[in-house]
Image (cartoon, rainbow, N blue to C red; front, side, top):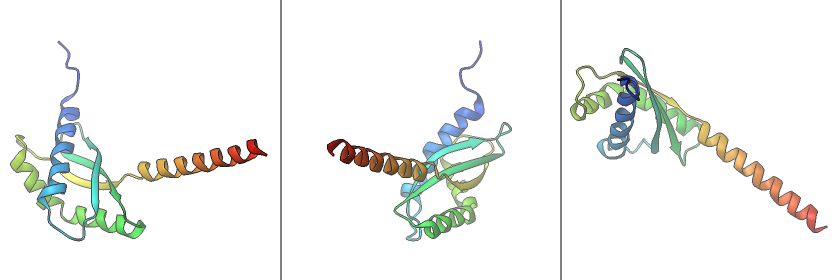
Length: 124
């Protein structure tokens, strides 16, 4: 009987849930902004986890600072993750900024402006 999801996909999902809780409640640091974990991709051998995050209400430098701080704190975060997950080996964490939210907001703004321009043109 074939499994519906691979082991790496199930581990990715669980890591995403646990990291969201750790970043929200477990880390008390004023340098961190409001961080959301968008996606976690775990390698087939479960050795490395690429964590894609979004930082809300931050400028470009703030986003880069948050990613840099998270990568520096990855061993500590990995230790906290190990206490909550039942895995023999916890993957190495690598944090990356996911700009898909920013791109989506920019596209929505352009579409809204285009709609407003067409509404003004229709009234004339």
